Image (cartoon, rainbow, N blue to C red; front, side):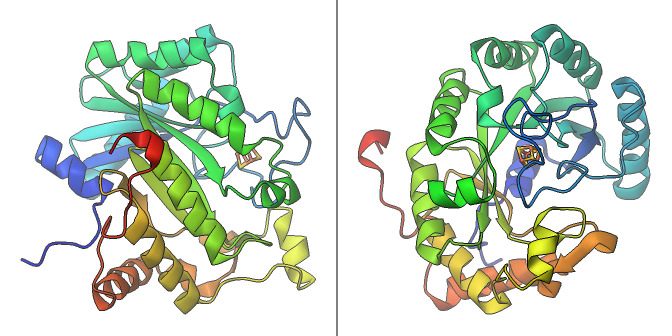
Length: 312
Ligand code: SF4
């Protein structure tokens, strides 16, 4: 069999556990400091009113009940027997540590939940929160911390009302790595004002962090996000399919081969997805990026150069 040109996270899980491992999308009822006024109001311009979550979760239900329901669904649909508890919507470390412990403990109550994954902001990660997350590793669980840097272009972040900086991100990433938590970085290709060079510089930055994983998203427009009004006015250029595929192939070639790829594209839930149309077919994007790499004689990490500070 021809080896895949990209090191995917889902293949890594199958190698580690000998079977499919399914994410359970959970909602701990969090909000976000970029929405409640602690940092800003309104949120990032690309973020929808569900906080970029799955949008289907019964947030009012106790986490233990959400786990049971999601497990039953995944067992029926995919025959899955192992799971990762995934807190996705909004900022999943934005609460007092005791509240976080209460929620995470419920999520990890049974042995078939092999790990915890939390999506959060850099400015909501401190020593105490990272210590709590690391404590689950001593209980034989893996812990992934997903943080959005999105781009290293600070002017773009400011225009998107991100209300945090690249340096916040670097500090948080160091805290995560110091505790051997697994760092997963979210990036967006095609933010207004960004060029392909900004994306490639973001990949180089991710390499300096010794990140364990990356989620690459195209900029998409969700009808519930503030970006939708700007897009309707024609103020938000959207990358073509070909330009996106070319950019991602270049980025993956520069990315360290030990930084596993969790995603190669993004989309809003179908009823809310305004653009780009091509993002609705994620398998087509994956096939095209792989083909582009092969056409360039490249593969994941083939153009990687170790950052001076990374020590190889
Ligand atoms: S993208 Fe994240 S940080 Fe930005 S508003 Fe949404 S939940 Fe908050």
